[in-house]
Amino acid sequence: MSDNVVKERRQFIKWTTLGAFGVFMGVGIAGAPYLNGKETRLRPPGALREKDFLALCIKCGQCLQVCPYHSIKLADIEKGYGVGTPYIDARERGCYACEAVPCVLACPSGALDHHTEKSTDIKMGIAVLEFPNTCIAMKNELVPSGHAERMRQFLKKQVNVTNLEREVLEKYEGFKGSECTLCADMCPLPNPLSAIAMVPDAQGGKRPEIYDGCIGCGVCEEVCPVDEPSIVVKPRLTYEAYYEKGER
Image 1 (cartoon, rainbow, N blue to C red):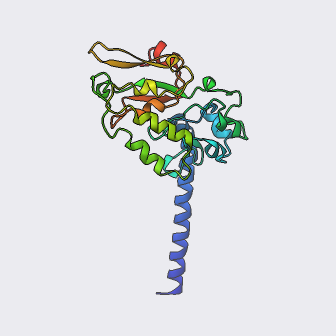
Image 2: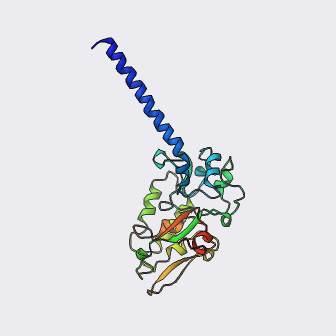
Image 3: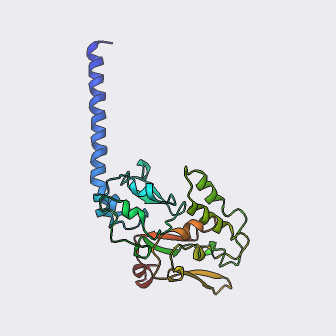
């Protein structure tokens, strides 16, 4: 093969690769507003509205480092928009609404609003009984054996399990074989009844009822003992928007 052919092939590979990269970057930039608008991740306490949060977050991970429950994660490339920004996977680990809100105190950029000074100031989203047909409380079924295994496995992955996490696990394990009130009784707020309560259901069981004190912490979603949680958190949605204005 002549040197000219080899040279031309190298040039072709070089420019096609650069061209593909340019198209990729162009699509990413053009699609950024759309992806931003579709953001559904649960952000840490005090997070500003998504556009402002992304503009201010410096991806330092300080909020993650001070969280005593290992609730906060940093988005990787698989999460798409906002790589490196903090979020909470409520099914894996909800936010336990620390009274001093250390994640907010640790944020150096203001992406987490420092006016969020206590647990009741937190407004992350709203809990919703999304799949009532799977709710074992409504079906009068008891909390199954092995319901705490997911939480145990989560803690096994942590390098430094805190006493607070051990206390949560111990409390959670204590519900085995009892009537399911987990979403209400595990609520971390100082006054859980302002956010959620178990009320009689027409089918003879009980169901969780959400009130305007709900902060969208996601603990109810984490502790729901069925494979797919009956109750989930809708990030950045308010109680008024969902329950009072008929978005449900």
